[in-house]
Image 1 (tube, rainbow, N blue to C red):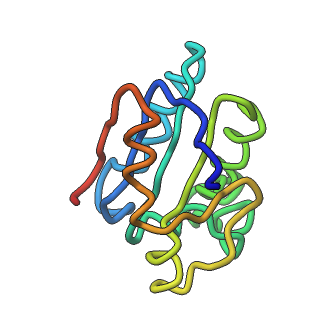
Image 2 (cartoon, rainbow, N blue to C red):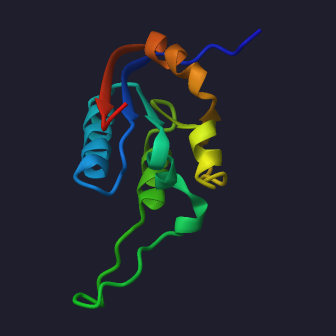
Image 3 (cartoon, rainbow, N blue to C red):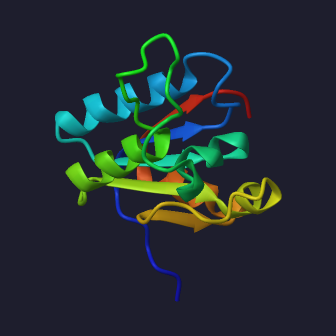
Length: 135
């Protein structure tokens, strides 16, 4: 018997290439705002967006030569912080096939890999779905 997904008030599906615009910032800000208001959130990454939570990213981005003293966290660090802050209301999933196809197999702890045909279960478990990017 398959394990039932937890209920989600909102499913945020990140389907586009993550670094071509404001997609990543929008996803993180939307998730943070919903979670701060007590919503249960499922976040699903597909395509190149599965790279957002790779362990290989480390905790800090490479230094900016214009602002050498400032450190910037990677998207993996931001995701880990969100997961730690909202352990019972945030569930983060990455498409297993997209991850494998892009060599993105090692995600940070807390990211659950799911087959793409399981995506409809996430739609069924959520009251609302919000898509960022292309399908």
